Length: 68
Image 1 (cartoon, helix red, strand yellow):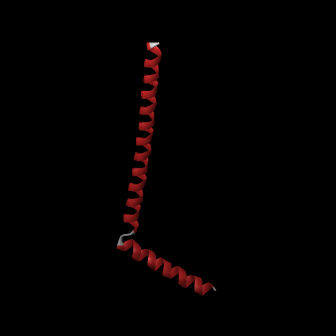
Image 2 (cartoon, rainbow, N blue to C red):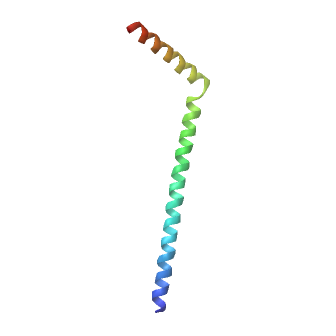
Image 3 (cartoon, rainbow, N blue to C red):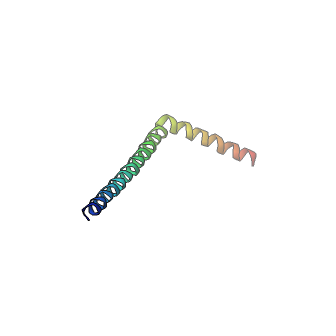
């Protein structure tokens, strides 16, 4: 009888550790995604890039109106 309860405790502990590891891994992945998004936002929100995008958009709009 004693062996059965030890095995149940062991399995319970392994299950809890597995869930904690899974939770930590998913949180780390989420943090990595947030860091990547933040890096992309910083890269594409710099003034030089914004000006470049605006001028491209204006050129595109001019071309659109010239065609139609």
